[in-house]
Image 1 (cartoon, rainbow, N blue to C red):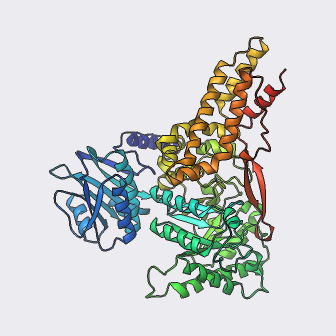
Image 2 (tube, rainbow, N blue to C red):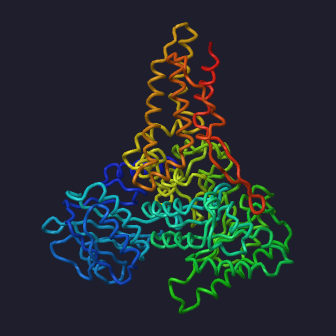
Length: 637
C-alpha cells in the first residue's frame, strides 16, 4: 500500500512539474502560477535588506547582468523599474513587508528543512516585473537567486507570474574530493564552485589523496611556490589556495580543507599530534579556509578500547581548541569556523562484525554532537539508504554524514561514468547495479559525492545528485540526466554529447551491439550489408569532431570539460573512422595502435602518503562491442 501511495504522489508531483511555468533544477518543491505576465525592464534595481550580505547582492547583480540587463543597487524601490527585493523572513524589512502585502504563505519556514525560501514574480500595473526573494537567512536567499537565474534564461519578457516555495531536503550537498588520482586543478575546482552555486550545492570537502600536503606532509604548510610539473599533477601553492577560497566564499560553497595525519591521530606516543594539526589549521585559516576535516581512513581499523577512546578524545579536544581559537563570543563573523568533519577508520561498517562496529561508533558518541562523522554505508560503494544510516545511528546516537563513492572511478580509471544515475550503477562494477535512490532518505544532514578524476565530466552526475538532495520525492533519474547535458556543456554541444556518451562508456550503446550483430548475420549469409552500421558510426564520428571544437571555445568550462574527455573522444573517433573504412573496403586503411598511441593516454596518481606514484593509462571507450568488432574486421581476409 505504501509503495502504491508513493507511486501516486510521485506521479502527481511529476504532473505538476510538467505543467510548471519554468523548468528549474533542482526541481522546486512547489511552483504556483499566478495570474498575469511580467517583463523585465532594461534597468533592474536590486534592493537588499540589511541582513543580506554582499555576496548575495553580488550574485543578484550577476544573475541580472548575465541576461544583458543593467543592474543597479538601491536602498528603496524605484518606480517604472523592475525591482528585485532581497530579504529575510520576519525581518520587517522591505522584502518581508512586500511578501506580507502580497499575502505570500510563510508555511515553508516552519518546515524542518534547509535553505527555505520564497521567490515571487509579479507584474505591476505597467507589466514590469517585480521580484521578491525571501529566505530564512541570507544563504537561503542566495539559493533563491539560482531559480531566478534559470527563469531569466528562459525568457525576460512575457514571463508567467509565479511563486516558488522551496527548500532542501538535505542540509549539506556537494562534493568530497577524496578519490585516488590526480587532484583537480585550481581552475577546475573554481569552475565546480560556480556550477555548484548555480544548482544550489553548498559543500566541497577537499581531501585529495595524492596531495602530499593533505597526507604525507600533513603537518607542514603549503609551499609559497610550485614548479609547472608539480602544478600539472595537482600540487597547490598558498596563493592558489587563497584564490580557491576566495571563489568559494563568493559562491557560498563551504570549502572544507581536510588533513590526513594517518595513524598519528591515535598514536599515544605522539602527544604533539593535535598541536600539529592546529598549527596546520592556523596556516589554512590564514589562506581563507573556514571549515576543516580530519581523515583517518585507509590506515587500518583499531579494535582495542584504549585506542578507540584516544581517537574520540583527540577529536573532541580538536573541536574544543578550534572553538576556543576562532569561535569565542565577539569573534568577527568572517573569522569563525564551522564544525569539524571526521572520516573514521571504519567508514564501511561491514568490514567488521556487528559487535565490533557497535563498539567503534559507541566510542565516538561522546564527541561533540556538531562534529560530522562520515560513513560510506555498509560497504565502500554503497548507495545511500536508511538501513545503513539507522545501523550507525543506534550506536553513535546521532545523524551520520554520507561520503558517497559515486561516480568515483579510481578503481576503474580507464572508464568514464557519464550516463544517467541508474545506468552508471549498472556500469560501475563495485556498485550494486539494482540500487535506486529512495524518496525518503533520513538520518543524514550531509550527502556529498566522491567523483571521477575528471572533475568537469563529473558535473553530469553532480547535477543529478544536487537534484536528489534538494527534492528527493521528485527525483527522476532519466529526466535529471537529460537536463544535465545542456546545463554542463550548453546547447551548442549538448546534442552531440548526448549521442556520444553511450559510446564514450566502456559498455557501448545498445544500438551498436544490435547493428554489429545484424551486420555479422549478413556476412554469414554471404551478402554483407554494412549500410546501417556505417551510417551510425559516421554520426558518432561527426559528433566526436563537433565536441573537439570545445578545445578552442571562449568558455573556460568548455575547454576544461574537453580536456577531461579528450583521450576518450580521440580514441572513439579513431576507432569509428577505421571501422567505417574497413566496412567500406578501403584497403589503404591505417591500423591504429589503440593501446600505445599517446593521444589516447592520460596520467594518474596512485597511493597515499609516502606511496604516491605517477603512471600512464589508456582510455577505454566502447570497449565491449566496437573494440572487439574492429579487431574482428582486422582479422578478416
